[in-house]
Image 1 (spheres, rainbow, N blue to C red):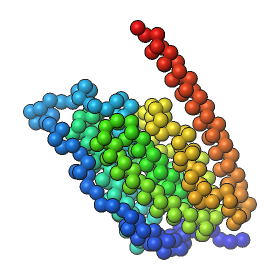
Image 2: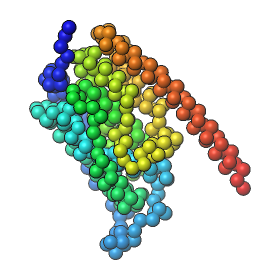
Image 3: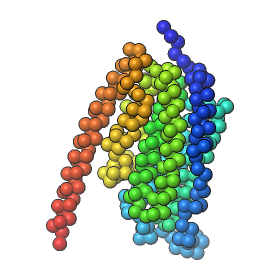
Image 4: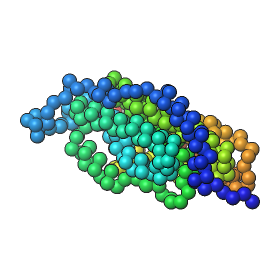
Length: 316
């Protein structure tokens, strides 16, 4: 019987992998500056500075686009919580600390540029946005389980970064505004590079400790929730985004889960013991259930859209 690797063992074994992929990330990452993505000429004072306060008619974005932008921004705002959690899982020693610092710095740009854009263009109510930020960051976010966490953390952030990338890109399209779309495409490019780093680490972890890593992947996939879960009105807003194609179950399954699991060769692996096989079987069953739920949701969404179109057709 082999002794399970501790988090410290795994961090030591994977340090050369992390160093190699950090170097690759730094070669691929492109420097960009938030101020270059904000139409500053649109800015004007609010009432406290002798101007006028926000009014919904000032926004050029649809209600769906505003909801998506606020949801994405509040998610980015919670970076201090994410930094704390990932530093606890990865440590701040050596290359791990270098990565955590670099990742945090890159992620911080996202909230900066999104808030500047929304406030300058008066796309959303700045008072309500600040109130929601205060509430969300006060609540924060924390891992549901303590103890050994590296394998679960690296699996989670792989999926979360890809999900966030999809949400940002779809939000940009929903804005129907070229500056917002360009900005969110730039953010999505960052998220994609972060995902690749974490996906490569997870692949190495699966090779190092296949049974433990498979259990971690299964636990994360079957319990996955977006990091913005604790923000005000998140569940209600998530339904709005799903109904309008910003991020829904089908995208989660077909654009996030399945491609990542294929990259990890999850269902082709031959290095699992009985424990790993059981975890993989659980994962496969869950994906089948999720596919059924995704189809059901799509059918309900299509029926609702058809009913709405019929009602619109009879209105004089």
